[in-house]
Length: 407
Image 1 (cartoon, rainbow, N blue to C red):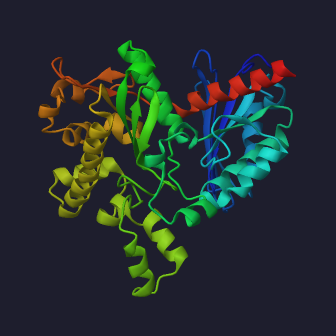
Image 2: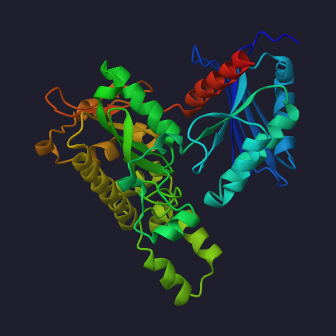
Image 3: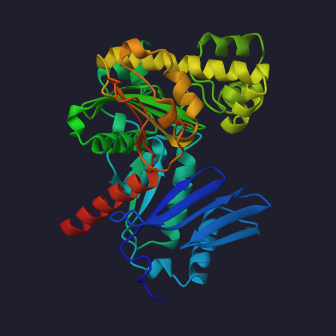
């Protein structure tokens, strides 16, 4: 089989507990060559959706584990005429959610690195174990392709101490590695750089607020290319109201649920991570459905939307003060890129702060970066589509390339 179709490209892998997302793309031209999702891994009715150069395939069969899923994906590539193991892949880039204190840049995975990722799993028990499973499964089947870990927390590694430190007993915090780590860092870095490029300005000269709004949601304040604050904390639970996560809550609520409600730690964990947020407030975490219900006058959906906006506006205000004013406010991810109402409502009435949304520009749907503020707005408001896969691919190939040259 020819190695030409994907020679020099990167396989990007994002493994969840029962899913595996993958994409093959060219980090130079940005062309996406293949894209897919294996889901319900370990269940009786697993499914893979696979796309290769315009050709869609959907397969339903039992996938016992992630290695079985990867093997099936490689077989789908083989059916497309591509032997991935001998196709000239430049690297495999693995998304790893938590890098702890150890990892703050993309890192070539070896036994030592793998062991360290495993050691810090308690910091992200819902994510890192699944990421490791993906690393192991891909490495077993593609042992000769350099594997690189790209960490969600890396961009926020050097947050100012005042932003990174919780007012917890210092000795306890040190012993258990309690600090603000931040997440969605790959997206925040990619989008903030793209925003500066779009504006034709040097990255170091732009102060911006980035809103990554999806089912998981976070914001960052980026001063001259350096993040100075972010909403997510030691875990991805803190901060904004999300699809199924509470975001900020009084820690005393946990004590109340345990002492009075008799709930276990695991039950509370499930409650705040999977049964709260928008879903907990109105039974729905699909933002399109929530907006439809708001338009129809649904009271529960209206409250959920208002709570969501209240938290957004609180952090926008805080970050404007923290930055001493912003040059740009940037919306990205599924909700940020597509929900015009959220963009308009979150910035409504802020003209005195130099922020003016142009209703016609904001209403335009596009997959391209665009300005949605008025010509007279002192703060430029942008929509910049995120592309975490491309960011991971570029970082992975840079590490793999530098390692091969050093060798």
